[in-house]
Length: 278
Image (cartoon, rainbow, N blue to C red; front, side, top):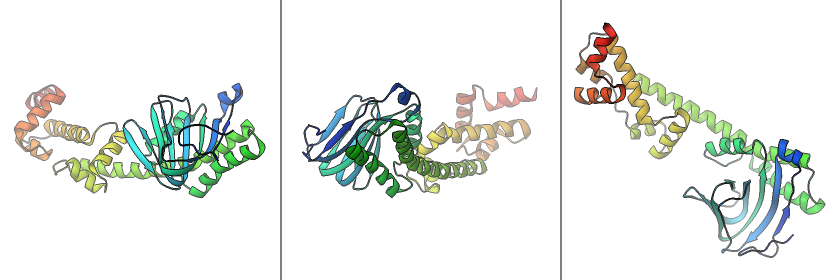
């Protein structure tokens, strides 16, 4: 059918699907599939449309915005949008796009894995491009695709993104593990966010975001707890003075060490040492 709306050009097409109870229970299923040619005034702004949207730009430029973050999309790019939450997308100038709204029992988990990788780039652009266009063109030529076949096509499409996300995830894990080991081996060195992010070859913002996602805490908090754990070891297993332990553990002076120790552990280094030796 031909869609109507601001910025949608006459040659555009949309096809609606109605999933059976079985498909909703066990498959990935389509809600609608489309091919749009758009003018510069095309924009969609919604509070919710219960599905996930995979959008593929084949000509021109577009954008999407969610959680206050605007991402621009060039030719041959993909966007994966959680439409359960407020979102907006539209054209930047004229553009052409293929898209599919879909859902399924594991769609949320798959979206979180791909979104968590920080990149909606498939392992193989060609396979992803062909898979999405195949869904549209088969629907255009033959009518609604059988549900089991639609599930197969969507799985194949998502797999390209999952493989890339898994590889990126593995690389991130290796990088974070190297940084954690560096902190453990060098607690007395200058370990600011800027210094650690340079070591990871990332901007401070992206490094902190990846570190928090992987470790569950900020780089600063991880560093503080590493230094305090080391300090507790020295307090109970050495005769070094409080001042010496402060410097060994990377604190700028004894006063800062004692303040930090009391704030996080509820006692002073001296009281901790005394209680541990009783």
